[in-house]
Image 1 (cartoon, chains in turn red, orange):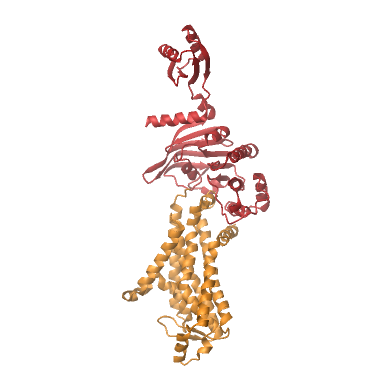
Image 2 (cartoon, chains in turn red, purple):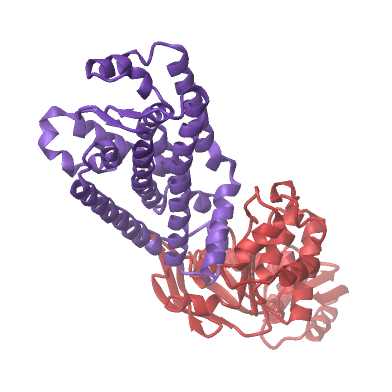
Amino acid sequence: MIELRNVQKQFGQRLAVDDLTFKVPAGEIFGLLGRNGAGKSTAIGMMLGQVWPTAGEIRICGHDVTTHRQSALRKVGAIFETPVFYDYLSGWRNLQILSHYTAPTPPERIREVIDWVGLTGREHSKVKAYSHGMRSRLALAQALLPEPELLILDEPGDGLDPEGIHEMRQTILRLHRELRLTILLSSHLLNEVEQLCTRIAVLNQGRKVFEGTLEATKLCNQWVRLRVSDFAAASRRLSETGLITEYRDGRRIALADGVQTDQIVRKLVEQGISVFEIAPEAETLESFYLSLMNEQRDNR
Amino acid sequence: MFYLQLRNELWKLFGKKRTYIGFGMFLLAEIVIILIFRYSNATRWMKRTLENNGYLADQFLSTLTIASLMVIILSYTLLPLYVALVGGDLVSKEAEDGTLRMILSRPISRMRLLGLKWLAGFIFSFVLVLSLGLFGLVFSALWFPADGNLFVSLPGERINIFEAWPGLERYAAAHLFMVSTACTVMGLAFMFSCFNMKPAAATILALSLIMINGILMEIPYFKDLQHWFITYHLNIWQLLFVEKIPWWKIGESVSILLGYNVTFVIVGGTVFHMRDIKS
């Protein structure tokens, strides 16, 4: 559905996106992660033909966006971080205006989508009277009007209150479940990405530093939580015998390749150290992301 | 599809309050000018000129004369301002607000979008010129006789006198050609609005260029080069009030204005096509 191959974008001297390659197959919820300025919005801009790539190839729904933008975007809906509309017009008129850039849209379809996003009864009010949550729903409605197969969401939870974020999350899951949409979600709300996405790519300073499933992020973790009577002695002994490669914080150890926790326990008991708890550290996306960013910083 | 998209552009344009500033100011300015003519000695020079040329002044202090006079004054001052204001807004205001990004996530080509916007700007210019003319006639008719003749005095020309009906025809034809003036100024601002700049900057740049052209054209040293200035061609509609209309001269100027308009669209379109649209 989305394919980026060696994509590069340079703004003057600054390289905003560098050699970005990834694929999003149909039916997936794919997360694009990275701090502000990492290149997420530029990458999305290039996918939508709004930003010209300096090099590389971008294909959306099988079409090259640079050369066949209209064909590529025919079945694409997009939402941007701050939903902006023609405030002086009604929600209904905004939807009419935006949908006609794709194809003539019958009023029944507009009504259906308004109903789907839960704006029925407010569609004829001027947008300037809408709350942020209602604007987000209107943004979703405009994205759904062309009956898309692919939905590109650029920071959709930005500025929403916790209730709004929850609602947005449920809507995205519903879209995926009921309409079988492929969704590309860019966000720095790690919790959202963790609850929604099946696969992620992490960008840092325009470069992709990780791509894989959420499970893979958890597998990356080598840390084991260890609660013993004497952590200093335990970690020293375990290091000497080569069972662990690292220890930190007075409660974490990193197992050497092929070593299992039962070997650790046996060794410690043999050494007369009481073991109260040993368990693999439950890695969250946040801890994975932070360690990835720290690693990137250290590598520089 | 094209009709629907053009209708949408017009909804956007005419849904905004600032689009009506021009209409409002025309109304206000025309009422003030008429009241000054009606209740002051402002018509004294007109009467003197007419009587010195052997005409009965009362026959010419009419709706048509006052309306034409107002139109000439306002076409130099307010008309360029309001068409430039709208032209400068057409693209850059949408880019500034972020709605352009919403539009360009749709499968519409940038050139088609620009074409639609230019056309909406043209329709606005047409309506504005039309209302300038109509407001002028309607308000003049409230205070001056509607059946009088037309007297027009243009700078550098001898006085021009027309009977009521031919005068009305000249008045209508002048407005038709004034559309090309309004459209060119709108097109210039529109071109700047395609660049990565604020709407106000696009409007100010367009007006500055028109003003600089106007000032340079009036410098006596440049008298021989007048036809090289855009403002010379922008004023060509006034020749519709000359007794023997120089059609070749008008045709030449209209062609040059058409050339300017095409150039503005090509330059604006090229810049807009090459631009990155970011939040």
